[in-house]
Image 1 (cartoon, rainbow, N blue to C red):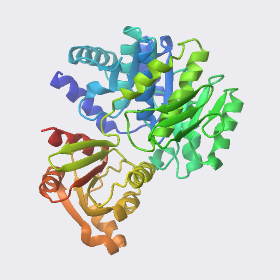
Image 2 (image 1 turned 120 degrees about the horizontal axis):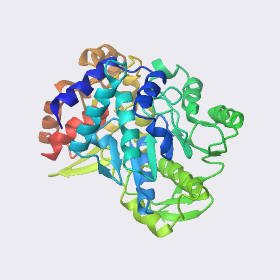
Image 3 (image 1 turned 180 degrees about the horizontal axis):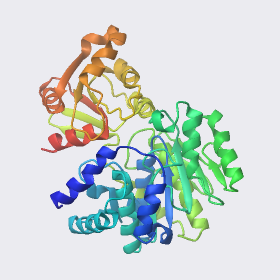
Image 4 (image 1 turned 60 degrees about the horizontal axis):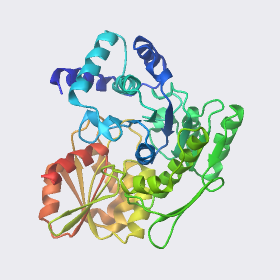
Length: 423
C-alpha cells in the first residue's frame, strides 16, 4: 500500500461520523453511480451483521456465484473491507481505486466510511460481481450504504449502541435500522424483542415489503450435538457452522432465510451439499475464536457493546468457560456507551481483570474514565487491575498462571492483540 494514499484516507477519520446521504450520493455520481448496476444484499443490525455477511457470502460463493463482500471495520488492514469470493482486494488495485477517488473528490466533503463505501461499489461494479453483500456501517436510514435497492434486506438484531446518532431508546434505534427496508423488497428480521417487531411490520406494510420474522416465519435451534436445526421453506438438520458461539444461530438463520428468498428470485438453486460445505468453511477472525498458546486457552471475541457482551456471556455459560483472566478495552465514540455495565456482566465469570488502553481511531474509554466509574463496582474492585498499555496486559496474562484468558471489547483492541499473539 502506498503510504501517502493511506495517510490521505486516514485524514478523513477526523471528520468523524456524519450520518446523511447527500455527500455519498454526490461522490457516487462523480464515479458514474456504480451502485445502481450491481445486485446487492443489505445487512444492518446492532450485532451479528458481520457474521451474517460472512456466512451468506460464503454460501453464495460455494453455489458458483461471483460474490462481493463489503464489511467494516477492519482488524488488520484496509484490504479486508473489500473481498470478492473471499479474496481481499490487492494492494495495487486498492492504490489505483484510492488514487482515482482522490482525484474525483478534490475538495468535496466526505467521511472515511463514505470513501470506502464508494470504493466498494466501484470495485464490485468493475469486477462484474453477480451479487454483493453490503454491511451497514452504523444504523441504517442515514448510513452511507443506504443508497442501494437490494434484492433482500436483513436486520439481524437491535440493541444499545451509538445512541448519540441513533436515539436513546430501542424503539428509536429500531426505527433507524428499519430505514434499510425498501419498497417491495423482502426483509429478514432476526433476533429482535417482541415489542419492537411492530416497528418493522408497520414500515414493511407501508412499503409493501414482505417481512420474514425469526421465530414466526423461520426457526433455528441448537441440538444436542452442538449443531443447528433450521426450519424455513426448507428444513436442514445437523448443520455444522465453523463459527462458534451460541449467538451465531441467529446469524445463520438470517443468512439461510435470505438464501431462500434469493432462490425465489432465481439467483441460484439451493444445494444442501454446497450449503453444508460452505458453513464449515466460513472464516471471520475475532468472533468467539479460540487460540491455543502453550498451556493456555485464549478466547477472543469482539463484543464491543452491551448486547454483544450479553450474547457473549450466554455462550461462555453454555460452554462452561469461567474463572478466566479477562483483558478488556473499549471505545466510546459518542460518549454514551455503558462500558461499566459491560464489565459488570462479565465480572462474576472472571477471576482477574486487566483493563487497558490501545491505539484506536475512535475515542477510547481511558483508564481515568474507568477509575471514575469503578467506584460504583467496589465489591469486586480487588480483582481489577488498570494497565495503560495493552501489550503489557497481554504479556502479563501470558506469564500469569491462568490457563484461560478472554480478550474482548473493541475490534481495535482485538486487532492489536492478535498481532502480538500471532508472534
